[in-house]
Image 1: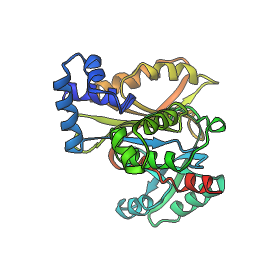
Image 2: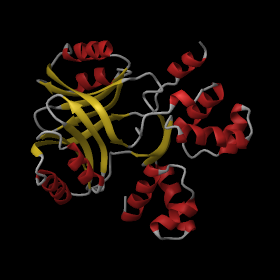
Image 3: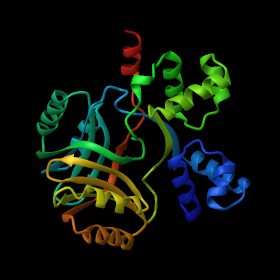
Image 4: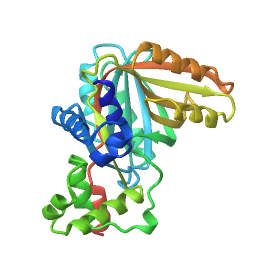
Amino acid sequence: MDQMDRMLVQQLQADGRASYSDLAKSVGINRTLVASHVNELLGSGKVKVIAAVHPRVLGLEVLAHLALKISGPSHDVLRRVEALDSAVYISETTGAHQVVAEVRVSTMNELYETVAFVSGLPDVSSVNVLLYEKVIRSLFLGEEPVLERLSLDQIDIDIMRILQQDGRRGFAEIGEAIGVSMSTCRSRALRLIDANVMQIGAITRRAGINGSIVFGCGLSLIGDASADVVNLLADVDGVEFVARTIGRFSLVATIAADSQQQYNEIVSRIRSLAGVRSIETWLHTRIVQERYEDTLDQVRSLINR
């Protein structure tokens, strides 16, 4: 990816359905060139624009970060963890833990069972759990959905299902596929976005992006210093995820850097904050799974009651 591609991806992460004209204004080049770049990125598979439904809508109330210590080869462990419906993010890492995974489940009992399953896998010597008390920033996890003011029906589910596969698909085409008008499709989709039920944005295929570094960091804070750290991270390009956690860290974050120098600069800035007691970092050496296309069966069961 060149600098122009990275700028376009950044804009598409904020608004996956941004028009070519709006993208051209944002990055300062003409519309035709923007369209060429975007179509090449999407056609190559390097970038995909999808809709992600908020986990709360799907009944997934418990989100957690699992860090695994593995005593042998990681292949079999990764395969077994990848098969879990609850695992939405899995990566091999450097540092004290060899694999990290983000899981989303409905109840604390399900989390307990998931951790027990992973702990029982051959070659897994320990599993450290961080419970997400609050997700502050994520590519596809915004504010809590306004469910009390919104009733969902089959049309909403059909729209979300199609946009999960292609977030830039035209409203006229979607409407034709599900049997409603373009205006109905458009108004329904915008209502779902405005209510934080779903977000539409770009995700990148990590493999083959030369020079990029994706790293995680866990921060132990003095008292309640999370606001200062969050404010700093808000000004750092490449911050993909920030959560306030219960466990060995106060905050956990995932950050993409263009180089080792940028990585060093970001970590140094975080360490300089008075409220930071310590910071631990790990590199994501191979991202095995990054899944946002959640099943809508839970929503369907709720509206059919």
